[in-house]
Length: 459
Image (tube, rainbow, N blue to C red):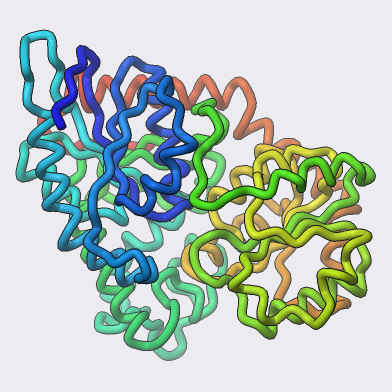
């Protein structure tokens, strides 16, 4: 449907997963505050989940699109990829046609389209319609740099050009990154065929991204000391994160119902005594044996905890676990994470090291126990543990390892001091001013006074 607005429109195309939709919504809130009408595109199944949580006064126009997937079909990486490559472009063309048409001289068209790089087929649609396309990277800039160096890694015989797997004897693929083992590159997930498919996905994504003039990144300059200078093939990069600090959105919609009883339960716990545990929203994060090992460690530790574990991931729990933890633990399917992390009773956070979770932990000044599972989480964990030194990495869930890890992060005063300093650098007023300045420069650069050729810089 056509939508008349005097405000200039910005179409936002997120990758359809919670960890991507959330920061894109925060970005939409920033655009709204600066006088634009954000048009937010999601597949029908996501729109159904979040529509009841969206206020009509939020000034963001939500548009749903079919993905042609059966309601009972799992939304995993590969089914989503197929839908994004085949179905989404058709409906995106329709949306662009409707909203880029000006009913009158007072009606503003689409000034640009912001595309999550994982939804890269949208870049091709924007080019077809002559609409300026801006890339959005919701994760660490270091991860983008790592993936963008795939051609260099292949050329230097560090990884196979066919599979993306490290060549024999290659332990570290990018010298400027924290140490990654051979199995920790972002595309090395699942079976051999799945790894190859993911590797090809990233090669295609980065090839499409080469046409972009600008890239907005949900990160901050303080992550950059280990980065080598940006390559000549890159677009102008604007670091505008963490968006959780700078967008000030209303409550972010979630795909699942939150157990708000957690917050009331926290009110009864001692200061800095509770361990919060969550491994994200994407896929089953740890297998049954690890679920059992962690459950046994928590029983032995007898420390207050909140563990976010969906009901279909609980097969590994020992018999009677929920009854045994009634006096000191909460097991929930989904939780209001930012409210929990802000609470004074929470002392540390055991996390898979998804980027949003790390940003929220720093924002809420919580030290981290890291158990990365897949994708960019290993690199994120490397920065938490080795660069910023605001957490520790667990290699397993043995009782002794969990007990020692919790004790160290809870009691390490120097780690707490480093976290406080990092928080100020990222979340303080100077950082807020810098990010607002970056947004202003971006809008001048891409909308008010667009360049005639690609420029290369980082702000």
